Length: 49
Image (cartoon, rainbow, N blue to C red; front, top):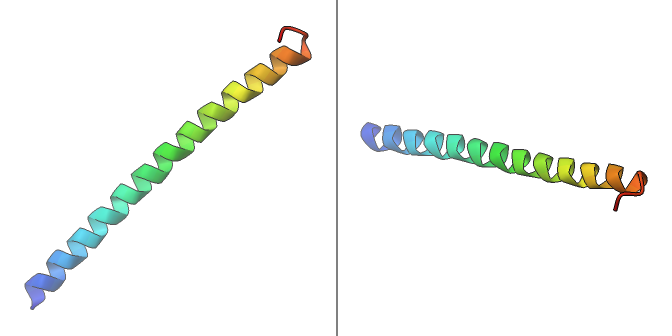
């Protein structure tokens, strides 16, 4: 029984790490998209659309 609990805890821990990496990656993707939009908006303000 102890072995099952330990295995379950390890699985839950590894899933938690994977979720953090996924969320961090998504945050970076959103940040890059925001930067592209910001660059385009700055160009349009200068009249270079």
